[in-house]
Image (cartoon, rainbow, N blue to C red):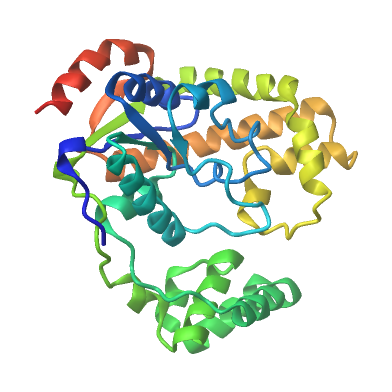
Length: 312
């Protein structure tokens, strides 16, 4: 796809929410003359600076940042688009003599960079609108039955209540005439060879991560997260858009609608965050076993080792 300069080895930093990966990325970028590139699927959305914990303006002023807050919430940003945008951002950073420091909590984005994505064609807007409308009208069970008739292999892989993935499978077979399972079996082209990158996996004690995440959400509320979600609600967007599924959005929408108290909304958002942390940690253990582990409490003590590793 795109050649990556090995004299400016990219640094990839993955980790669950509230693990301290963004602070580590900032420290590394400052000390190596790097540029931070976002690999978080929610931090791309313009309207959600506070609720997605995007880097604050003072951090963005310290080193260059890319792929943050540049997509409107009305769009459904995808892993395929991320790969294209990341290729351009990496090339731009390296051409300016800056080391790419790619950081985020979306495991699929890192997998896409290191392994490539299956070359599934884009879905036309008419087909996408049709099947999403059918999903709203008929529901997951009925569409799963239709998928079973048209694509039994894919239907067997999906639970009958997973509307989003069922719709996706129907869109693909309608657009291409081929099963999504066939497309998924095709290997993509990696953007970065893992041997040419420094890959860091940041994590910590589960209870500590939960406490950090709880405290961060309370801070978000003080900083205006509720107003942010209120402004988002005024856009009247499709509830299935990715931005509308960002952690905390639905509980705060219930609060705004008078369907929950502040305490209930906070508890629900914190529970969502804990569930997400668990999913992120599971991904790390399955897919990033070869990455250099970094403990949340000791990120500063790892910096010397990291810089030594970069020079290898």
